[in-house]
Image (tube, rainbow, N blue to C red; front, side, top):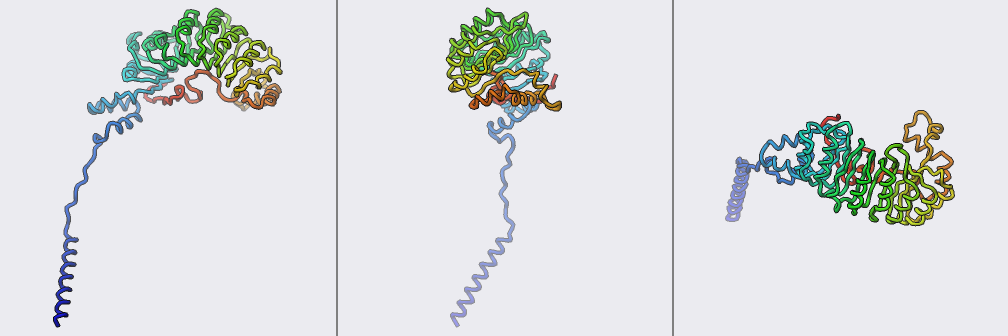
Length: 395
């Protein structure tokens, strides 16, 4: 009897505990509120990462939200790499970019608008890489470019594409940092300019004077005084001021080779060299990896085959008569395809490829010191990716 009473009491206690548990479970509880995060709670590093994906006009709008955003929108990381190629840009924007610490700037084919005064870019800047083109149709353009160059102090790589009779590259203040220099299509590269640049800029390792016009005296001085640190050199299509005749000859090439024995890439397109110069190239340029030759009509085929003895030579470009391309190619092919077909099908190229199997002949781009090594999209500034902005109109 007592045992049964004890069991009933224990059962009642257990039932009471279960009822209390159900009651507690059904009772509404107070929910704890989660903290609400805002855009302002993000650290500066995250906001900066977001700002770098904005166009410059959007960035300008963001700068008006608050003082913090204004400070972040002016951070150097946002303004470090700017590509304005082929755009119509107000001068004040370029000046603002330089003021905010732009280091990599591309101004090829850029039309600069609303110039308040010619010396608008005379303020010191932090540019390291610069690619510009000089438009002779714009009366302010040459002065602007001279002032921009004159304000640089840290340039490492410079490309100037000139469409005019005269332009004086003011770059001597960069003589301790400048390693890559490209001056293209300048119609009056004077001996004074050649002396100023190549006597003082002794850290140069890569130089291109492609399609420039100069006197024989200036070319001779250049070949005899170029720094021995040069590894890549283009003297393609060097001509005289008046006649436009090619002036690079054997004596110039031999002087260059004696002066620059470390050459790894050499572009002699459009020159008048013979077997004499080619013999010196084969014998003395043991580090040469890429070579571009002009019209080889003065050079025996057997002499060309001696290029196979060069230990490091991998790429060879030779001139081929383009007229044959139109005879051997179909009407629906583009120019590049026609030349490709020409290079494969002419007897000269077939024999050259067969006898120099270790060389890549007329393959790949060969444009020394060019700011866009791929020559496809204008999105590169040498090895730096420099995407173009869509904020400005194309002229």
